[in-house]
Image (tube, rainbow, N blue to C red; front, top):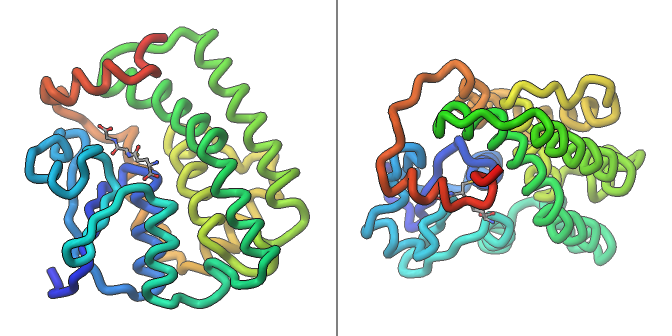
Length: 244
Ligand SMILES: N[C@@H](CCC(=O)N[C@@H](CS)C(=O)NCC(=O)O)C(=O)O
């Protein structure tokens, strides 16, 4: 660990953790990296509750200041470390494009991508509960609609969401899409525009960093997992996605 004041609590299994991790690393922001393993219930301890009463990752601690919510964290880090302007552009309308995507994704890419991961990975692998095919088809249909809207409305014919350069919106989008890739769905097949955007994004942050951040999630289907501890099991079962 470095002696930085900034600590990030992350599990790279988690999409929002990866966006914060990639952003911090790509911008050479020094931070203490506190790795928590969600699947071992390490986020449910009293100690972590002092950092995040929500018991969710990512969590950020900067001196005595703590915060949750990845999209707010990205903006906090961009402002605090005065990262290059393109990440959160000062231009009114470019910034509005970033804000627009960050607002939309909470009820679109985020839940619909997560549902694919839940139905194809979490439910069968961690909870031993296969998802009925009608439910799976409905989840996939929602995700396809989300990707159609993403391509048409947010990407259009631009290199990135805000225009010519990468912004935090692109990072927030790609980490959710990669979760679906990790679920065994080839999202980029038959979506060349989306595939080219991903390629530009990988080049912008650096391939090594992108792969490092996604290594764990992309190997999910090959992993063997211990049964979740009781407290975690209870929490997973109380997730609305469980009752399918
Ligand atoms: N909206 C939050 C979502 C945070 C979140 O849902 N984190 C998940 C991992 S992706 C988590 O910590 N889940 C553990 C739990 O709820 O038990 C953000 O963007 O930071």
